[in-house]
Amino acid sequence: MPFLFLYFADHGMYAGQYGEILTAYYVTMLLAEVPTGMLADRFGTRGMLLLGPVILAAGFGVMVGDPTYSGFLIGEMLLGLGHSVLSGPPTVALYDTLQRHGQEHRYLAEESRIHARRLYGTGGAFLLGGLLVYFGNASGTSYKAAITATCVLHLLAACIATRLPNPRKALQAKPRDAFLGHARDELKKPAVLWLLLYWVVLFALLRFPFHNYQPYLKAAGEIEPLLANAIVVGLVFAALNLVAAPLSAHVPKLVERFGRRTLFWWMPLTLCVSLLVMAFERMLAADGEGSRTWCWIGISMFFVQQVPFAMHWSLLHEFVNHRIGSATRTTVLSVISLGTRAVYALVNLQLFHLQARSGLATALTTAAVCGAIATSCVLWLRPRGILRGK
Image 1 (cartoon, one colour):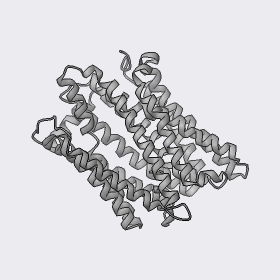
Image 2 (cartoon, helix red, strand yellow):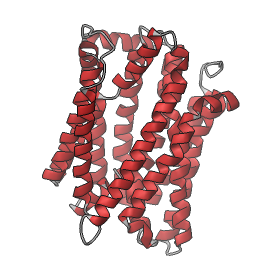
Image 3 (cartoon, helix red, strand yellow):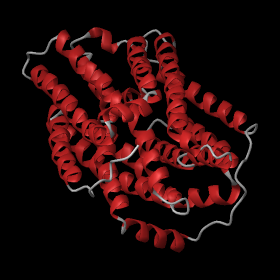
Image 4 (cartoon, helix red, strand yellow):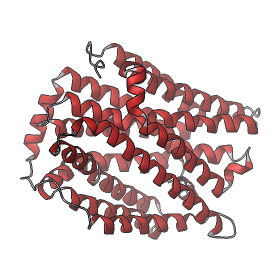
C-alpha cells in the first residue's frame, strides 16, 4: 500500500486519474456489498475468508501484469470485490462465537485486541514492502517486487483459511428486495440514521488523507530527501500502525475514561485540524518557504490521524452490536457500509480532481473545512442520550 501511488505515477497516472482508480474500488465495494453478504449467509464465514484473499491476489496480479489505466481500474475493482467479501464475516464469526458462550459483553475488548494485532501485522508488511522496493533494483524503486509479495501473502492467507472452523450454520440467502425492505425500515430509526450520517463524515475524513499519504510523501520528498527513500517510507507506514495498535487495544478504557460523546466529537475534529496543518506545510512549500522541519511536522499529522483510525472500527461495531437488535444487526452494518462508500466514492472523485487542478494544499483545506462543518451539524442534530451508557 505505501507504494501503489508511486507505481501508478511511474506509469503516467496523475492525481485525477488516481482519484478515478480509487473511486472504482469504492464503487465496486458498494455494488458487491449485498451479493457478497448473501453469499456469506448461504455458505458461512469460512468460504468467504478463503475467497476474499484469492480475489485480492488476483487484483494485485492484474496491476503487475497490465500496468495501464485500464489495468489499474480492473485491479482496484478486484480489490474492492475482495474487501467486500471480507467486510462482514470476521466480525460476524467473532460476535456469534462469543454470543453462543454468553460472552457477548466481551465483544469490544476482543474486537479491539484483534484490530491491534492486525495493525501490528500490516505494520510489519509495510516495512517488508519498503525493503523489497529499495533492494529490488539499483534505483530503489522496485514497486513490482512489493506488489508480487503482496499476492503471495494473500494466497498464504487463503491457505490458512482452509483450516478455520465454520461456526455459522449455512442459511438461505436473503432476496435483495428483502434486504432493501429491512434497510428502509432501519433507516427510519433515529439512531441508525444518525449513525449513518456521522459515519459518512468520519469515513471521508479518514480515507482521504490515507489515500494522500503517498502523494504527500512524494511531494515532501522534493524538500526532505529521506522521504524519497523506500525504506524510510516503509518505516513511516510501519510506525503508523505501531502507534495505532496499542490505542486500538485500549478503546474500552478510553470509553470508560472520557465517554462516547467526547470521543465522537474528538475523532473527526482532530482529523480536520491535522489536515489543516498538512495544508499549511504545502502552502509554505508552494511559496518557496518550505523546510525539512515543516515536512516532518506535516508527516507527524499522519500519526495524529492514526488515533481516531485505531478507535473508529471497534466503536462502530460496539455501538451497533449493543444498540441494535440481533435480527437486524447485519442489515444495519450493511446499510452503514453501503452509505459511507457511496458518498465517499463521490467525495473522493471530486477532491482528487480538485487536487489535480489546484494542488494538494487546496484539497486538504477543503476537506478539513467541509469536514468540520459537517461534524458540527451531525453531532448537534444527534438524538438525545444516544451516546450515553456504559
